[in-house]
Image (cartoon, rainbow, N blue to C red):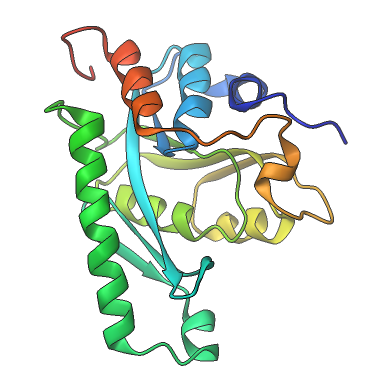
Length: 218
């Protein structure tokens, strides 16, 4: 199975699988940070507006790669009850971790938006884009946050996903597009030749280009 060259290549490939949404009342939301360059290609191909969804994984202290949940813009929080139960995570540990990640979420919102308002989502089809799904914790938080805005439909779209993570979203979204679902999966980055970290500056630059200099989301 071929790998993507980079996130731009992955976004262009993903966009081909979403062409049925071109010309419709669609908003493309990229999960910061790595999902934003992918989402930018999707938005460009569909002729749709681009915005950002800031999501922070709640990593288990000492094993931060393991998600015990996630938080998203708008105060949304989803928890991984299996991890919490198996590791006997206390409420105090969960609360401290969530508070730390909430501070970082607010910081990123401020850096990325630069006073630009969020796009209205009510009654529109929202395409949530990330660079891949491993556990899906971040995407679940994003979908839950979007659902609060009463969209017409939620579409989860990624270039690559663990098969079980992709299947799980069938009950959480109106449409799910996972271009690659390799088995064994390993990790999202294993399916990219270039998986360099997306920086805050990268996200800000991409959004400014999409919104236009001096303008905001339409």
